[in-house]
Image (cartoon, rainbow, N blue to C red; front, top):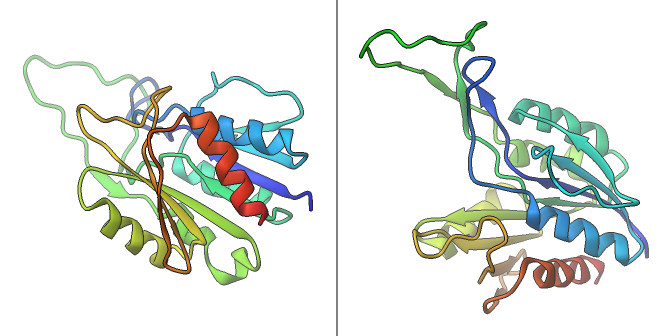
Length: 212
C-alpha cells in the first residue's frame, strides 16, 4: 500500500541576533536517504528540512524551516494527511529569551550572556493521540551515554512506534556521511542491533519496516 510519508531532516536554528544562531551538527543526510528510499518504493514524500542546502530529490516535496516553532507549525500542517512520520531532524532544546534586532557588537572583554528558555518537545506534542491517530511514528535519538535506557524512555514518553538510537563520542559520530551502528527499538519491546551500516542502506531497512 502506498503511503504519504513526512520526514523531518537536518537541524533547527535558534537565532541570537540576525546573524548568529544556536544549532547542532545535523546535516539531514539520513532524512534525505529515507526520502529517496520511500520515493523509490512509490510513496508520496514530504521533507521538512532545516538544511536549505540539502540535495533536492525529484518527485519529493520540500518545506524549509529554521526554528523549532517553525518545524512544529509545518508538522501540524502536513501530518493531517500523512500515514508515517520519520523524525530524523535534530531539534534545538533551547532558544534565546530575547533575539537582538541588530547584530550584537563586542564590547571590550565583557562576556556576552545569553539566557535560554526550553523549546517545547515537538515530537511529543505531535504524538498526542488527537494528532497521531493511526499514524506510524519513527523517532531518532543520539546519546552520549545510556543509549538503550534513554531510547526506551523516549519511545514511551513520545508515544512512538519505533526509535533509532545511536551513540555519539569523539571517535564515533553519526553525523554527516559517516556510517552508523544503531539500535532499533520497537513498541513491542524488541531491540534490533544493527552492525556498521551506511545511511542509504539503513534508510531502505526503515522504509521496509514501516511498510510491514
